[in-house]
Length: 262
Image (cartoon, rainbow, N blue to C red; front, side):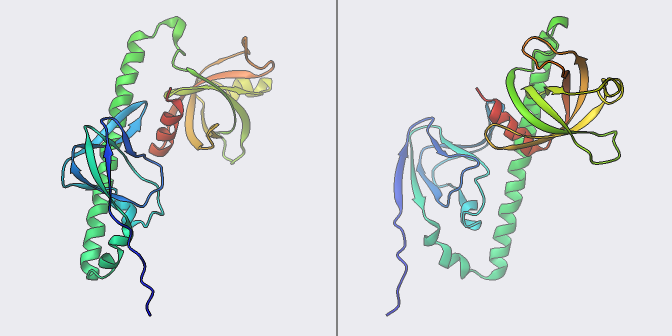
């Protein structure tokens, strides 16, 4: 006798306004249909939500977990805007029907959804850039000569590998990130007299790789904007460098944004 796999039942859930349904970066396999209510689909950056879609009754979200078979993390978050009733669908309910679709129809479906994902990513990245421009404008308007590094606001002690981009080799030096913001870092290095005059001068650019306390890897390039001797609270014998980011991937910027959230 054939052993048939039991198909999970449809589950109905209620969410109150503001309640999180799924979170970006988490793994999950369920899809959701909105029976009534409203849901925001969004990415979070710099402590703010960048909304990419507002969905209502009859619409479905979380479908990429079905196509990816749950192998990739969620690309977006979802939150109830008002009292919302959802149907939670397990992929096993549809996998057989999906696999039996004509290959050309399945191909067209996958391509359409991939284009939608790329579009949502572009919308999110554009929102991130708008927030960065707004933040830079606020910092510039409030900055005074005595607070030029006021944006170095989160104190850390992260060991990092840094390589001067002026070097022809891939030799990395050791440094310690002492504070970090969305705009740049404060970096301590041990340097001889010749290095202070050549390697660590304003305008020099470095490739820097580190690991945040939450275990996330961070990679970026940064340019020296100021140099100084050790100060109170700094490590004796090290040179302190104020640096601005010059290049950082969207993923690294998102990781940094989550880390800096209060």
